[in-house]
Length: 252
Ligand SMILES: [Zn+2]
Image 1: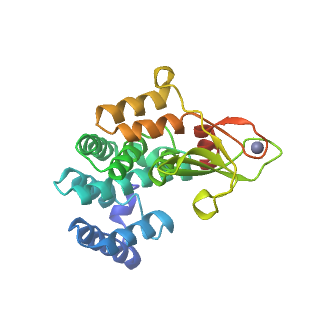
Image 2 (image 1 turned 120 degrees about the horizontal axis):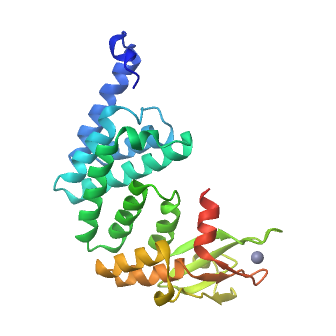
Image 3 (image 1 turned 180 degrees about the vertical axis):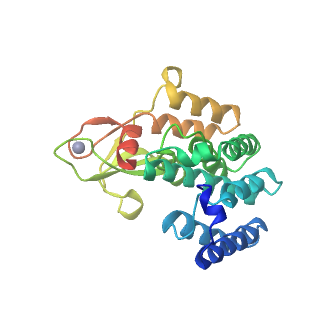
């Protein structure tokens, strides 16, 4: 906020927005009001009718993340991470992150503590997403984690001439690519086995997330990550390609 606005008369609409924001955050913090969370996502993230740079937003979400309610903390971390990445993308600066560096540091510390103490597979994945979003080095953590949680990615083949969309399945239904959404199709779809990354040869972010999942006791997530950071075959042109490479391409 520029300093001059604090001494000028504040329009009524700003007052109303500030009151609404405060009320929504208070309701969300109780952990018994999912509508409040839904409204925060809509108004802060999806339509921006509430101001993400309002000093209450990241401060209150950090308070929730540091309190002892796991569900509220997870929701606060998920929203805060998404808001920061969206601001990075939308304004092409890291202004929001820099302006709220102490809150971001508190959120990241809380995300890493909850991550180490979360047994549920999907809750764990969303906490990893929050960690990555709060760190802010990549903008495609949501796409990466979405596939691990839902056990499938819908991707485009990297072929410049453009093949149809394809599905990469990683989970209970198997580990393969197919030209149709396997969940919605009959049993006669041609499938192509995936080529997971060799854990001993993984590097960079894949290596780090794999090691983290093992250290946190999530072997199944670690295994899924070898597929996310491995290769798939396009059912149409038979070209092998990096799964995570196409997750990045579809998130930009
Ligand atoms: Zn193709």
